[in-house]
Amino acid sequence: MMSMGESVDVPALTKGLSLCVGVLVIICCIVFMAGVATYLSVVVGLETMIFAIIQLVIEVQAPEAVIDKLRTDLPTLLSAPAQVFLSVVIALFLFAMGAFGIAMAVILICTVAINVYVAVYYPDAMPNRYSAPIDDAQGGPPQVFGETKPAFAQPYEGIGAPADGFNPAPHAQPSTADL
Image (cartoon, rainbow, N blue to C red; front, side, top):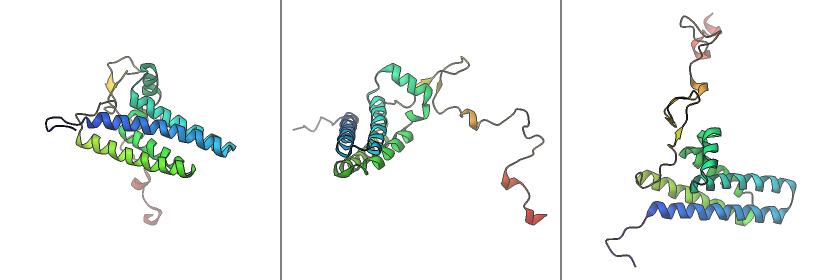
């Protein structure tokens, strides 16, 4: 029994819950692939297992080489909204895996809701795994993820770029009804 002066380490509990649910999702995928044993069930099971393993690797923050590879190849995957989206995708796949899959999908969605609650109400207690520095490709100082726009969001200034205020966007062009 806890006394009045002790407090519960909520982030550690949610991390443990997330790890347990991730392992159970992998077990659910294996049971589904073994039970149904069709090509499609194996593909769906392996895909869901890969997503769950990626989430477990990010949650555990180990090994550093894998995290660095994810950080360079898939930097958006390390953001909190991407983790929630990946969990929803995993849950949708789990809903197709029978009774065990449905139960795991509901548990996964509840775990995501708990993690979001902890991240919102205990922001200082959560480990900040989403703002790890990314080395600049031009050799400059490391940038914190999210401070710079991706390459596709930068304005185009090459050959054929709009000049003299010309805007090629459809909403900026005159309508054929105006001609």
